[in-house]
Length: 330
Image 1: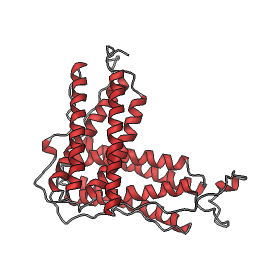
Image 2 (image 1 turned 60 degrees about the vertical axis):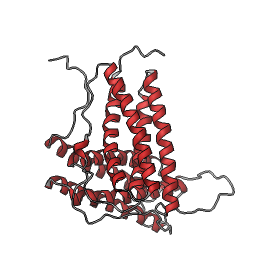
Image 3 (image 1 turned 120 degrees about the horizontal axis):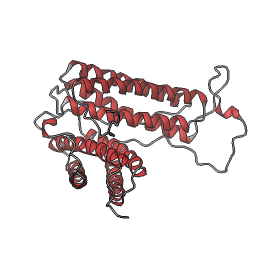
Image 4 (image 1 turned 90 degrees about the vertical axis):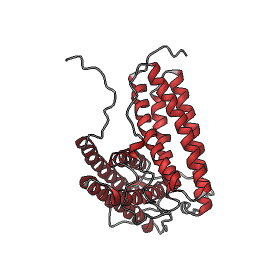
């Protein structure tokens, strides 16, 4: 396929958002590399920085060749390498692992909307790189005892089919609910895992944010993650399943911001999108109606929180405007 066709609207939009995300991650990696005192962690962070910098230059060349202005994204002024360590050991790689989950989802969506051969190839390469980093990060965290495995289960000895719609019921308080199936357990464990990391992130961001409205926003985010953690833990405990996911790290006492308020708000903006998609996925594949209701309400809470964050970003002039179609009526 020839690359003579100009970028389509979906390709330009996907590349624009990818550029925003990658410049943000590069700034955060620079800080984490500066503060890492574990050489293996520093190698993982440094390797990812080099990979992302390579792909950023590729995206910039595509923009230049197609006559697209380079987005502003996030620059050196958005990171303070002299700021003290904000998170304890292990958080850097745990957070990178979460970011790679977000990236994998974004690349899949963007590739589905790409038609030019060079754009499809770019997302193929990015996906391969991201999967490699995710695997390395997972192995590191397991080896260090930072990451905990989901609850163990008995292996099935036969295949069964659902015989009644009673399998779906859970809202009736006068009947016993069925035990969670393994898909549901996996979703709730993952929800605990991501929200534990999110809670530490929100605590750290709230601790060092400069603007009062931003600080208040991150404090609300902390309470939202705690609410979700409590919901997931209660669901598991009601099925006699001991929750196993932990954050594996904690926040230091530093109040000096390593990142600009703008960068921290955009980071949470991305994670909110990931949270809404994750909650929707859990809702679709949860087959007990009481649990479906709870995951739907979680998605609603995240959406409301995300909208509040967007308004703060717009008010402070931090929301870079995506490329858009020409208004033919003007």
